[in-house]
Length: 110
Length: 115
Image 1 (cartoon, rainbow over the protein chains, first blue to last red):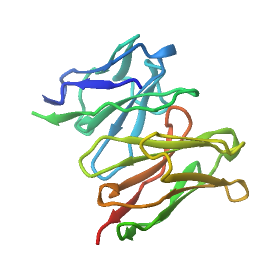
Image 2 (tube, rainbow over the protein chains, first blue to last red):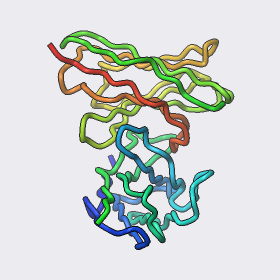
Image 3 (cartoon, rainbow over the protein chains, first blue to last red):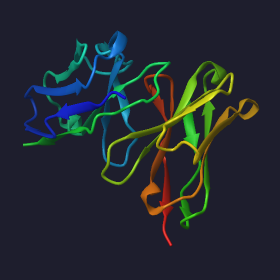
Image 4 (cartoon, rainbow over the protein chains, first blue to last red):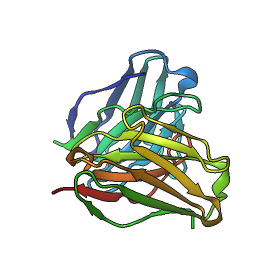
């Protein structure tokens, strides 16, 4: 089972700043099958990034994903007020025994 | 409209079972894998299992093996998640989701287990 560890646990930034969120896998993630989700209080998660770096339809281009192997990054280039939320990474695939999520990074307004 | 509509809030006693439904609309139901994910209060997302909406084959998380059953009704474009032997730790919001990376989510169903 692949374990995903996200850092930092909480990130305090101001609107307009750049956010860099990390997701590290305990072993290599095949074919970059790594997704990022945003979750706001009381809402279901929303897909932001899939295949490590592909933006989901309707997601602003200030969101970008990068990485491969065991180290992945979600970058938000210029924070908007609506971006403050919890972000999760996830490993997925069609032949996995488990579909794991990271523990989340809370992005809060400084 | 492409959406997943889940059944409503459930309150159950320890030891009971719960069945949550998820009706798909606006797309071809049978071509996607459908997953159930839950989130206990203040906790991370937790995968429970998935079903091939077309073929009906399933796979479950080892954590829930023996307690969870996922089924589907293709004529109703609906999937179901049955969880038995409920305990207080099963209090959570249960989500249905579509695909291998989850591009579509239901709004969630709150299941509360309390005596």
